[in-house]
Image (cartoon, rainbow, N blue to C red; front, top):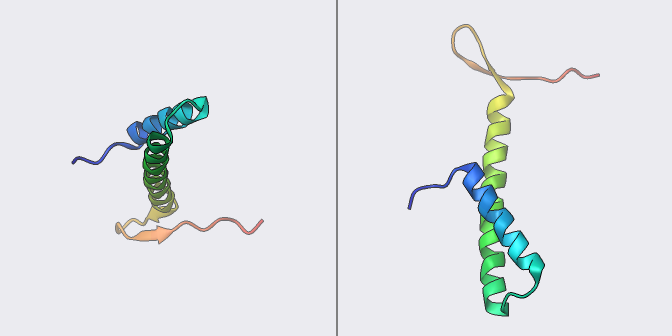
Length: 73
């Protein structure tokens, strides 16, 4: 199974939340949807964490990665 894009995972997560908020979902289906939503949430969080790590690095002129340091202000 191919990995979904961040946007596709987020869209599916939003659909699950809307479905569960309606409250007319049978218990077993709600539990399955909740479990799937938690998996999608973790995938999205992992993607955001990796993106943050990538964006906080700079490349030197010799193509070495250097962690970007914030000003201590």
